[in-house]
Image (cartoon, rainbow, N blue to C red; front, side, top):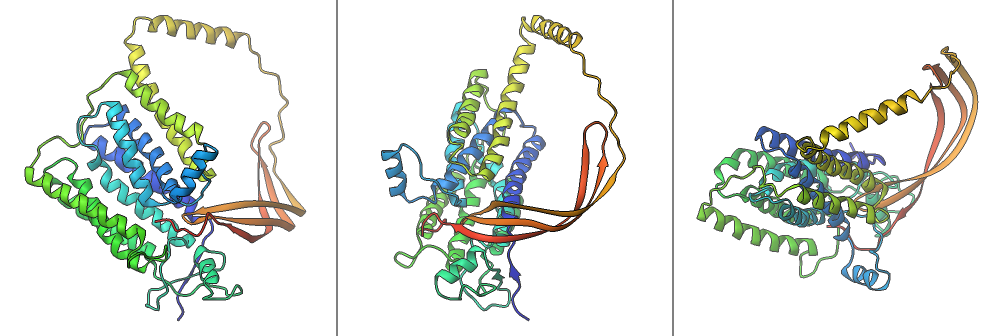
Length: 422
């Protein structure tokens, strides 16, 4: 029996969004359970996520390209690749800035450790189904193959391992599933021992040490960048991070610092929240053309969360102000004045009966799907017989369901260079 063939062009986008949603919801659940939830925490999460998305893209760009783009055009080079390690470093920078801006005086990283690992596990499922972040060639019983058009198949074609006419890649390590299992195991271990770690921040440091060590070993079975002095660039970076995090963890635990890990921040006033929210939203707006459609869909929700968090604070402040009754009275008066002067146009009742449609139809279009390794463009053409049924929903609305023949053809894979995302 041959190795299973994997390849789903729609999995990565869904898992990318699910990964972020899972991490945010789990963080909020943890804060609610600890009775530490506040608007400041929502703003901190928003800043962390925006900085994480930026970091995930910057980590895939060569430093020379970034410097040349900033010097000549003042813009960052376009890229559709993504890096989890870059997302972590970017998120940490965002947390440091937002934490100081919002007035947090206690550790915030411990709350984010387990949700971050869960997000990683969900995201790697999308990588596995799409075919990015794949492993080296192997003949182990649990090896997998990837269908034509996936990053794994294209890489093997470029390397001359298979011909362009091959229907699937060679068998490779399912490194994405290795990472899913490791992330879940590390999250479970941290859940069990988190109360035994005395110093604030130790849970996150332990997560960095455990994941960094496992990722270092896993890089030996992962296809990627060329090695320098036996190790890949990502492995050299992981060695430094693991060494520093281990030293910090040991020193802090030996000192036995006792502080409350997750609590409400020392509120610095409405102006702090407004400053953090404006910085987060401004980053999304200014760099909106640099982000991909998938990233913009996520960042748009994050910006709404930041605005809602500030709006809640503004509303609570306004309710305590003396001018609030006058503002409320004026709002009610204007609403009534506009409402009495507006008359809806009379509209004839539409037919709510349903009907069937039998005929032929045709159409063409083009779309792309994202992954950690870039974008792949597809063209589609819908043609042939059509059988559909339309139901009237009242008014001018209707719902049509039916069948139509569609053909999807892969056109090309967008390349951001020969470098590989860590």
